[in-house]
Image 1 (tube, rainbow, N blue to C red):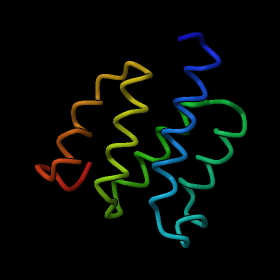
Image 2 (image 1 turned 30 degrees about the horizontal axis):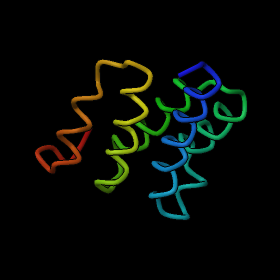
Image 3 (image 1 turned 90 degrees about the horizontal axis):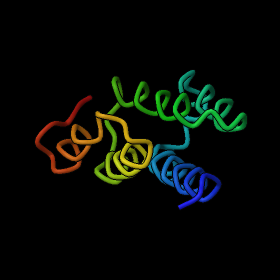
Image 4 (image 1 turned 180 degrees about the vertical axis):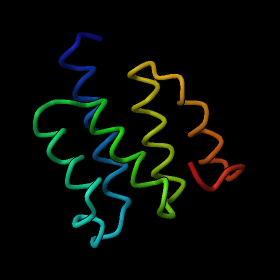
Length: 93
């Protein structure tokens, strides 16, 4: 996979995770920063902001799966933690 395709896939994973969050999360500082980073193609920083939001908010299995997919594509070591969260073995970050 070439870099533009990889970046598009990661961006789609992040968008999928973001789409699982409630509408009122748009006003949360982490989600505002997520959008700013995404707009500037700072995918890892955008990913960090989604993770930051999940530290203090309950999120769905779908959120964790999408974040896991993005982490796997970015080759981040925390990908396995998100698989555990998606399976329900851990409900928080």
